[in-house]
Length: 310
Length: 313
Ligand SMILES: Nc1ncnc2c1ncn2[C@@H]1O[C@H](COP(=O)(O)OP(=O)(O)OP(=O)(O)O)[C@@H](O)[C@H]1O
Ligand SMILES: [Mg+2]
Image 1 (spheres, chains in turn green, yellow):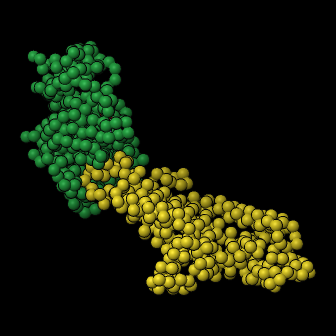
Image 2 (cartoon, rainbow over the protein chains, first blue to last red):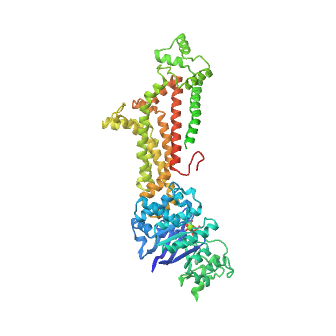
Image 3 (cartoon, chains in turn orange, purple):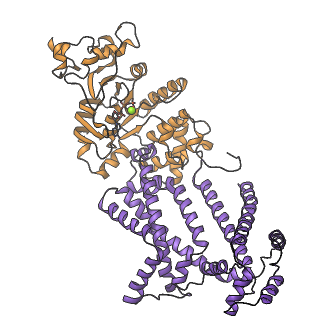
């Protein structure tokens, strides 16, 4: 069953240097219990898409398209209904976990707050539950740690706390936006492992955002490859690894395997002035004349003139 | 924490005594003779030479600066602030008889300012660039730029003369307090409101606010709890400084409303170079400044866990 269905999502944000188009006709589906990974270079608009699902984009963002959760269009909900969705259906964890915890409240109380708002239980019960969650995400000495403040937590611990807070909501969908990017390499693997376990334990669908291909492939069933606000290719992990179609996907794969030997040249375009035609053509080693003129359509999971021809 | 407080109080001793010595030195640099000015004020005409000499010897004013200073410090060690040259009363009694009025006015203006400014500041931050925000911006600009004496006269005219609701001067009852407190509270609340607005706007961009929203909290919890507590430090600092400022006396407002506070008396003493009063008052006011600053610092530690004093984590 489809849990989350993003249909033709367009997002543009006015900035001082022009209008940023961070999402261009993005469509993707996440089934119940599925793990879906969104992969893309820094600045391609991944966080913006995630925030759009949470409806936490800045108010000046221009959004069109639809995002369905269990068949309900999130954009048609009132703010109050959306808050309920955030309380009960979708939780999100972010990069730089320390900055995501409020510095003037103890970490434990922030987790307990999530328990309280989800379960509408007493302060005592929510504290008990928060302690249990802290043990669940392997925060040692949880009774002591409960009362500590975010500045007393390391990055890895803070991310565990964020995960505990997200799990307190028992969400149907967990969005993890580069949950390990700002952490030590050794901690990264642990956090990924933890997320993987919890997703199974809580029967939660996962929308993982990352640029770590190996982590993505080891954790997820489906991937979407994003480039400059467009999804270039999507499919199951096996298909993408076995037979990537899009030159960009192949280029990305070349960074982790020697089978494809065409690393991407140059820099991604600025989202304020996207090139005409296919956004990837200036960096594409297989570009044809048509690529600079006509924007290809998504067909059978690939957005490329090379495969459209066939 | 206790160690920190004791340490701070110890340091403050030097600040307090230093402030009075400096004020003493400044007054003695200013030309003019306190004996002459006090006697001429008393006699309502120029005093005779021997009267002046007698007065000076009686109060030790013929001594050099350093001797006068050391005498004063010796007295201070015995917790004695001396007597006013002008009134002959003990300085401490002069201060204590006036300070309750000053305190009452300072505290009520501050309370008024805080009660008005914080909610309005938060509201205009939450609804920034809305009509409410623009109106409050204009009102606060008006509040900051309006001189106190002008606002006082305006309030007297409206509420005292035209509407006849409130007494225009005097001291003793709550109704006497309203107009002077509003006069002083207006400027302060304008400053506080802008500060509260700016602080909230800054905090609202923080990642932890996004987290608070992401867990489905309503706007009231997000702003009233998560954002507000993070703005307390700049706001409390400003409240402290403003309160300390008000405690040192407000001459014009006291004058207009015939409010019997310390400001008026202190200015008269400065005009007549009444050394003991000036030094004594400066000493006590400096003490209050130090205490309020200390209170603000303690408040920091209570509300921001990242701030801890005395080397303990
Ligand atoms: N609040 C905002 N207002 C305007 N523009 C924004 C805002 N947030 C992000 N952007 C812009 O949107 C584009 C996409 O940003 P986004 O944060 O989604 O990238 P990302 O793919 O998550 O990158 P990273 O891997 O670095 O996190 C960037 O060009 C960024 O400058
Ligand atoms: Mg991002």
